[in-house]
Image (tube, rainbow, N blue to C red; front, side, top):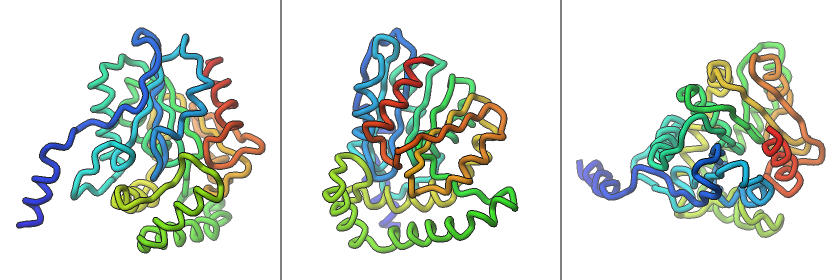
Length: 269
């Protein structure tokens, strides 16, 4: 009883929308909504935003639920539905008119896929970058990637169950790679990271979401991305309204090359 009361009080004054980190361009222009990955912030998109033609688009970058300066509600389970609800309330608060483009990176792509399934009537198209897709069908392909997926899931479970190790090593890795926005697990975002990893990334239904999205889905990933089974991604190209593009010399994060390639595609759309 005490715990539930404390949770209620902790959440009482939290906003029900996300922090809008960047809102650039005229409000009369078509809108691009940017959703970052797990344990990151809207800073993920800095390089991409520099390349987007803001005379053509209004660009809105959000800190997702549990990360950056967005709410971190006590007791939240961080299911994909929780993330989607906060994104949609924020878009409504900003009075963004349909149709708009949704761009997601990594976990943000998982959220974007579900968003398009629910709010297909509001979305013009989705761009899913570095989508962490772990399929359970079709069977022939499943056998090929099972071992790789088992390794990913074992690593994910280890990270979610070993707080000190994860926090310390995410910060060390950022320093080593000189990554200024990527996976950075801290005391502040630990619950958001742990539960989003479990309930949004691992327990996902991305295939079902994409199959039922009813909007054009564009998937982009790098040949150097070690965080996803590429055969799983390639298989989606057979679905209606899905286009899959593999970039050369591109990793998981939205680095300079990834940003330039994506901006060129978006600006020419």
